[in-house]
Structures are given as C-alpha cells and as structure tokens.
Length: 503
Image (cartoon, rainbow, N blue to C red; front, side, top):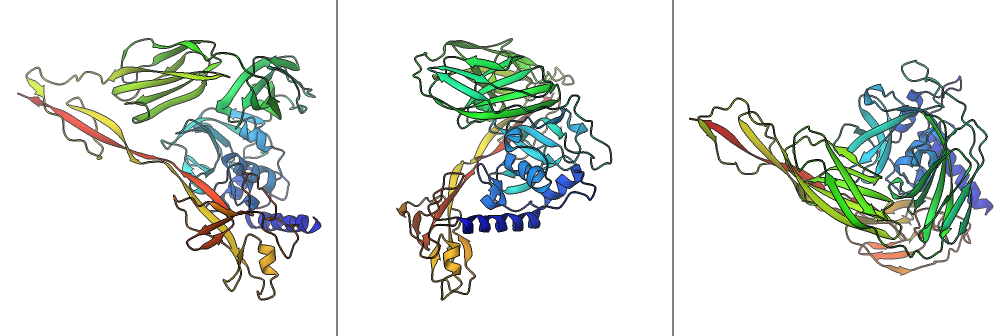
C-alpha cells in the first residue's frame, strides 16, 4: 500500500506542475488566475462522468471548475457546491455584467444543468462529453445562460476592481444527520453563522438537480419529508445568510419502505389562449392530483421529431413562454411523484403579424421547395421553417491497455511492464479507435506477477464503476478496460417561402 500511495502522490504533483499556474505572489486569486489555469486544460483530458482531476484522465463540467479553483488555486470550495450551484459569492443574472473568473450556470439542449468558467468576450471554458475541455460561446443555441456566481474567494478581478464581499459572513453547515422511519425521512443539522433561512432538498439518484424529489424552506434546523418512495437519495441542506450567498452540505440517504401511493391522475395542461402571435407571451398551467411537480418541454413541430425550444423539469405551478417564430407547437408535460409519472400533450399555433404593405390587388404565390439555405421573412414574403434530424445520437466505445517498448506484451498494468526484464522501462498507454461496436469481456481478475496488487489497476474499480482488470478481445488484440462517450443527435433547419404577387 505504501508503493501505491507514493505513486499516486508523484502522479498528482506532476499533473499539478503541468497544468496549474500559481496565484500571484501576494497570495490573492484573481479572475485572470482562474482563466489561465483553465486555458492550460483546453484541448486535453476527455470527458469522464464524475471526473474531478487529470488523474481520472478527464473532467465532468463541475469537476473542471473544482480542479481550477480548489486544486490549482487553493480556494475553499467543494465539488458539491459547484454541482449544486451553491458556490459562495455574488449572484450575477445579467450576461453583460460578467467578468473573467465568474462561474456560469445554465441549461444545455437536453434540459440538464451545465457549468463553465467565463473568460471574456462571451466565451466560457468547460468540459463537454464529446470534446473534453474546450472554449465555447455562451450565446450558442445549445446553451441557455441562467445565472453566474462571482466567487467570494476571488479578491481582485482581471480588470483591477475588487469583487463585493458577501453581505454577511458565511458560517458552516454541519453534515446533516438523517433518520428514516418507513417512508418518513427526518433531516437535522447545525449552523454556526447568521443564516435566517435554510432550503432542504431530497434528490433521488443519480442526484441530478432535475430529479428533486421534494424540497422544504425553513428557519428551523430540522425538517421531515413523508411518503418517500424506496430508493437511494441525497439530502442537501443549503444555508442562505443573504440573497447572494449560499453554503451547502449533503449526505446519502437510503429508503427501503414500500410505496403504495398511486401515480398522479386527472392531469391537464391549459394555456391562456389557443393561438398566439410571435413574441406574444403565453401562460402554461399544469394541474394533476397527487403530483409533486411537473416537467414541461415545448417543441416547434411534433414532440421529439421537431425542434425543442423550451424545457424545465422542475415546475411547481404555471410557467411562461414567449414564441419567437410562427408555426405549430407541441407541449409535452409530465406529472411526477415518487410512484412515477404520467404524460400528456397539447398543441397551439403561432402566427406571424399580418403583412402591412401588400396591395389588395394581388395574391400569395405558391410555396417553394424546402431548402437548408436561410430565408428571411418580410412583409411580402411568408417563411416557414422545420427542424430536421441530420444524424441519430449513439454511444461509442474505446478500449485501453499498456504496451511494452517491444510491442510484444500488453497488460492493464504499466508497473508490471516497465519492470519486465526484456523491456527498458518505457511501457506506453494505447487506445483503440472510438467505435459504435461494443466488445464483450472474456476474462477477469488477472494476476500481476510483479506488484502483488499494490498499485492502480489490480483489483481496482474506478470512480465511474469501471473494472480495470477485465479483458476484451478486439480484432487488433487484447485490451483491458472500456470507456464510453455519448454522441448527441444533430439537427438542422430547412425553410420554405411564398411571395406576394401584385396584380
């Protein structure tokens, strides 16, 4: 075990030297420091679910921000604070107020939360599932900005101005204590600061913020949730000393009781009108018996085959939407409780404002063929658009191994190959090409003649659950672990039009 720890320490130190610039000599951390640390990671380290450092060969989006601020710059922030969007600091809701070093939060085109580090000129650095660490515009169609946090531990921004400190000192929330009695979950905690309000959430695995099971806002330091379905949860306690700061802690919860509650029923979705004009706000109201919350997505065209233009998966009442393009739309809504969910759909139509400069002595000509070239609407030209799928989403796989310098011996164990007598200590990491083909394991729990299991790779399961000692036989030889990535479906827009013909 000593050898394993020593190797891990050396690996971590070498990675830090390679990718982490130091903060300035005065010991302050600026937005420029954070951007410089993140910039060193661009183009490196493919995405790994739950990844927090290059030792995992990648990051998820929260892990990248955690690595920059906590590991590179030594700031007092936790991965869970970033993941739960509760980093202590000043909340920014206007994109025009962003400064380099701000942590951006928003929704991706699948409706999930995503985070990145703002580096100026409407660009953020983030970790994505297909490109690893990259620079991306925050104005792209795949990302919708919600808010940003200017961390309290940034003392000076890159433009030389001092960030405003928190209005009140941030105290410390204790690790919540939890008792489970059947379907009742009681959560208690202590707090050392001056918070006047606490928000408590029970979130079901895989602990995405969209999967909030129930929530509670209180001024006391205990709360009880009832009628909880069996399953794995996390209990989050967020202390709010003031409107702009948050401080959170969490603990795992297991509920084993049986849930006899029925699914939601009597589900309806209403709109304040059936027809709207472009840029006219509409109100959507979901209603169901025995529902804890609702999920709503709006599609221009049909559900799933059209273009999704709105999504919110944690709605507790009416919500507003403003269509910007004419066409037929579909509302897909789910009523949700711990027993499951039921769904319904509703359609509505959006029309363009009537043309104001066409003569009564004329007529609208025939519609054109659909084209992928953009066509702009005018008072004398009607334009329709539709979303078309260019490619389907799918999962790709690749396989890894270590190969000795002669190319004759392959293994999952780099330490073993570097110490092989016929090898000069230069074993290298190799991957197969990414492919949609998945191979089956044909061996497990291989022994290691050199290290006796005291190193990474023997009887070891990584954070993402991958067993590193499994053997896979590919056409090009044996490999010893599997990695996956998700390729999202791609969409494009087609247009058709008709012109006003005078006469």
